[in-house]
Image (cartoon, rainbow over all chains, first blue to last red; front, side, top):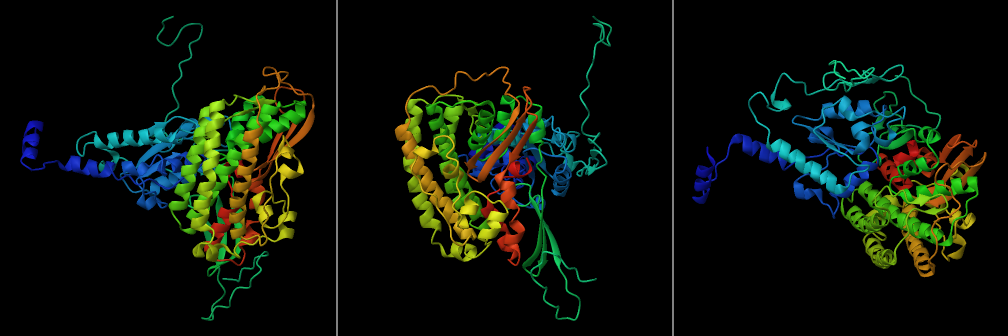
Length: 213
Length: 386
């Protein structure tokens, strides 16, 4: 239905919509985050839900302690190698459609603790992340901005077609393998289906692979 | 199934009525649990509702703070100390700065000492207010007390932000002083916040102190006897709630704490209610300290000019600096071998050591009381696991 006709109908008091718009509108305005804090960023996450910043204005105030009732995971803080299997298990237990916000430098890449032997270098090695918020810790405004970016992302999703979201595509997995702590480190050290180490081209003697100087 | 006996069990399980064998239920609380204050985990063995054994499991937030600090320069570790006890970054900075100042023999100018006291006591105010909010949240008062606490906390964080540039991770102290000076305008703002704070406390107390539900839930719950508190090395509000007069601000008189008149509130029973009450009273005493510090602060330098920023290499030796952080005795133990980074760097975290008596406080209690007993200890996992 084209836009002028919609507007004309609305003037008559007739509201028209598509299933897709209705579905996305409902989903984006009632995100239920998982009540799940890991470290410092969790305090800012709590501050975002409190009186001054009030995340309830964006429909995301119902923090659920159970992953079965949540559809947004805010990974707020440093993920250590001891905690990583639990984070991924919690993600697997969440019902589809589910989204992940990686909050803070630690959840993105390990942040200031990246050189630590026990710190996971980014949660996106194991689970797909929708929104990244840099900062150590990010301000509550940044979390609200991330939430609005996620709402925009949800609003633009198509129910059909090749680019439909993961939960409507039966071929894509909704659960991801949980790493186990092996003899020396987490095994596997990443999920190769969703994350690859960045390719680094090292040029020797001023020549790179393309043969140019 | 054979009857399991636990060496720490003070209670013998009730014989089962159906002629079967006695059975315990083992429950794993955490690491993802709404009331474990982060990623703490307890394995609780239950006989019905009663706790027979409690085993804390931690290390889910072990971020290698000490090892990283041994490979950092002395100043480079300062931002990392912010992230130890992430509710009160300024007192962490203070303890670390104090240890390095002892190690290198640095003097702190008077104005810097006053600024340290002012920011440190503001930190104590917001930490205690938040702790009470979280404790009430654990008790089921979801929302209101925590909202009130965070409303006040935001005012104090605004002060920190305008002074240091960051809300939570202030990174404010430097060896031999502070990083930035407070303007007269800032001090005026702080004065306003401080003058408004007692009204918040009155409101809080009217809501909570004589609340029947709070009293029924907390009095006589999670009792920590005096002897045990001393033997286990408990410090801070938890120790004082058990009736031991030990406050490092009075004992060590570090900085300029000998100039202020303030009382050390003491509890009597050592239960959760006393621990709540101690924090309220400590906030009132903090306001008294702040009033005196605001009145007495005078202009002057904020940094010892002899301190080297670049190439800071203290002489070989060791030092232990400790302060009364809002959670207890926070100490930093440093060994220098004359190189730019410490040879050994050790944190004495109050949260971890206060947590060691959790099992003794919880044995024989209902499982619902375990949560509030844990909440009253005031742990921050960044400091427990480091």
